[in-house]
Amino acid sequence: MRAVFVVLAAAGPALVASAQAQPSFQFESVVTLDDMQRFVRSNFPLGADRASLRKAFVEQGKATLKTHPTQIGVEKYLYDINLCSYYVWRWNISADYDSSGKLLQAYVNGEPVHAAGTPKKDPKIATIAQPGKTAGIFRTERPRPEASKGEKQLGAIVADADSNLRTIDDQILMGAGPTRADPANLGTMKAYEVEPWRSIFDIDDADRIVPYAGDCTKADAVMDARTRLRNR
Image (cartoon, rainbow, N blue to C red; front, side, top):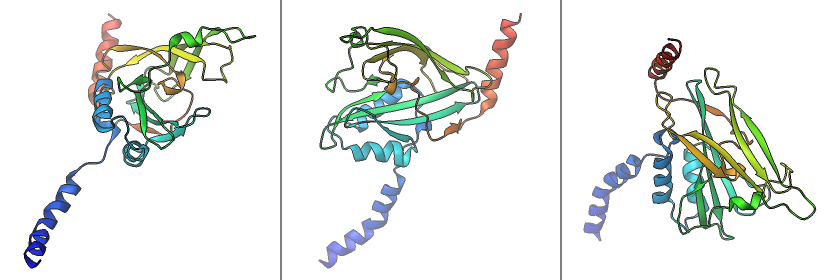
């Protein structure tokens, strides 16, 4: 017993150091949509506990938790970053859980992560009018006044089976957004066909908009160069 105690005592500091070396999740550490998909897929497989996602995204990442207004066991984690006033980047990580809090599907900005999880909602649901109702197509805008040097509003198209934007379970949104959370290189434009509530365009506000953690000097130089090129 004494020998075992000595071994454990000697290993104790190393175990503590190892635990302390594991960094907490930070949204700023993920730059691209593909990287976030990979992070969620690797760290939160189907069947993962809801508590584990909340710990990473809400407790550590400081995202805003929103529960779905009509669907039980569905919630999302919102994190907004002001990219040097050129664009407000949104991470909208949403998840479906079963009655015991086990993960059925996770989504990154409306796109499902797990091939074997809950399937993505069929876009046709929003084009089939409900009995006594008329389906409609609407243009919506998400104000982003914080992007004072760039894109101050995000535009999208919403198809709605009952033409009532207050009932959100019968809607599909079509829009586009950048693929990189980097003001000097926003990547390419990605087209979305997703549920509005899970998207970068949804009307829910995060508790705060976080300033970009990097250096804005490079972004300013890139934007100035583009402006000079356009004005030639």
